[in-house]
Length: 159
Image 1 (tube, one colour):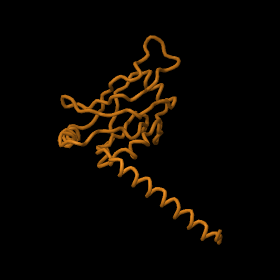
Image 2 (image 1 turned 45 degrees about the vertical axis):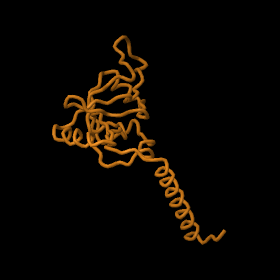
Image 3 (image 1 turned 60 degrees about the vertical axis):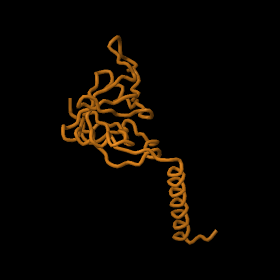
Image 4 (image 1 turned 90 degrees about the vertical axis):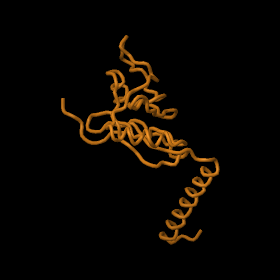
């Protein structure tokens, strides 16, 4: 079988960028079972409640929902099981130090296949306050209005 090339996104956590200030991102491999890989290749996963945690020098992914494979048998996996992430030791050491500082958490941003391997993009993030969320929504709306006006002026409309 020919190995896949490029990147194929399975799931993205759009709410994470709204709820958190993203400080840095890391790409990690995931330890999966066979039916989990087949379910992911079918494009089924949810990162909404997911988070990562460092325990005993290893990084673990919690609450990521990968539904059972429809054609699987008794070998099917538990949909919300804890999954081990594959990172280098120096990256894990950085994450241990930064998450112990307080107020920071590890949030999965996206789940994808890169050259045939399942990967997750982790973000070291701090939670936003409600006024920060309102401010980012206001900025996005104003940028959209500005882009709309510029498009009208370019087209020559002055409605």
